[in-house]
Image (cartoon, rainbow, N blue to C red; front, side, top):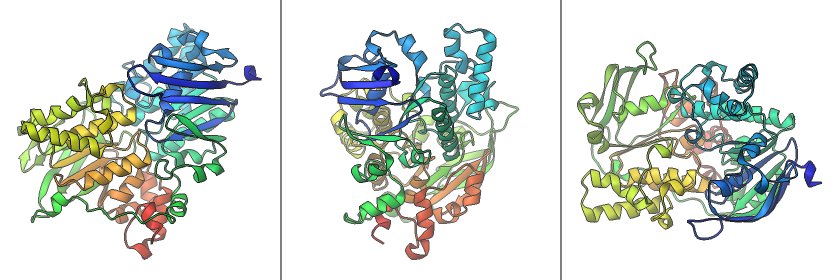
Length: 539
């Protein structure tokens, strides 16, 4: 029987060499041809470790103690070469930066096929087939380093699909994608499964995946399988604070629990008298990486004290380029950006960092120190904070992102979600006046991102917060102002109620309304404001 099944996992356990305790323990399951198995659970529960075991990276690249066995089409992976496994098992990593090697999209998607020694005509045909499947044929001739995070994610997936594996492992494939791209990617995955591919998908955006009807769901906690069965049983067994369920399911479950406490947003801003003080100003800002191509067109806006701004829009819309102008990493080709009244052309990035702290989309762009503690101390040290203050800042930042137990761990040995929290903590420790975050919730479970967003917005030091996000619910719950960006232009700027109620405009900007947004719009006459699902349960 096992020979007919694409994947059979028997009594699998693994402990990383440099960590205490098993990452996964006594995992057993099998997967059928044409099945989508959704794997859900909190950050650090062992989901990515399981993926690494199945694709052979454990124990070949990640060392430690392993027991049990994995069969791929009846063959024990322990006896297979990694190159043989990779032809049968395709993997798309959580962070596309770690997967993309080629300088051009065509070369990147063709890379695996060239290593197989396939004829040139077949390589081109498979590349074009994969790009067409994911609706990214227009990227074929582009430089990979000029792609947005979401575009890189799609290119990484195309490179795997071109290999035509029979098993597809997806580790947070939606983390960098705008809602419309996520929906298209999920539809493509459903089509592939319907054609016979076996898909194991690790994903925190459970609600999005449920739309394509996964055959089964595996819920993991503390390295073990807690539930394995059909979708209907999931909402009853999971911790709704860890795994983000559809809004109505959370409302039903949360009614039985105490109402959430109301948080005091940005007390550092409220404590000052000049509530309307402008901290950052964009005046007719235009920019392009190439002299012929303009990416930003005539951006005008002000960031004021007390603003909590969500920046929404499609992949490649210019959101990150816009934010990089605020922090001085890029200088406008036309117009100007003022930070504290001073033109960013006349300020160094280090000077601006005292006002604006920036958390990159990819944590690998930020992390370098041998331990988490040294990583967090680096910024405050360079900003010449007093020595005794630095230790306090580091400890508080660790507590806020729930990583106090990882102080001496190497940052790059942590999971992607944990690395993301380290990168956020590194900026928290610097105590900049404005916190700017690019995709802060990528790779985070529901509880972690709610906890650290709550904690960040209650910090006395920040006077404004701006975050780029594809998570509409993050804007619904936390923003008091929403910017909608598309094609390098500011399409809308207003309160969440003003901007997010226009579903047609959202869809035109590839922003898909979520169940929480729809529920808030339905109940707005009753509530007068947008609320998290746990709060709606008690209205």
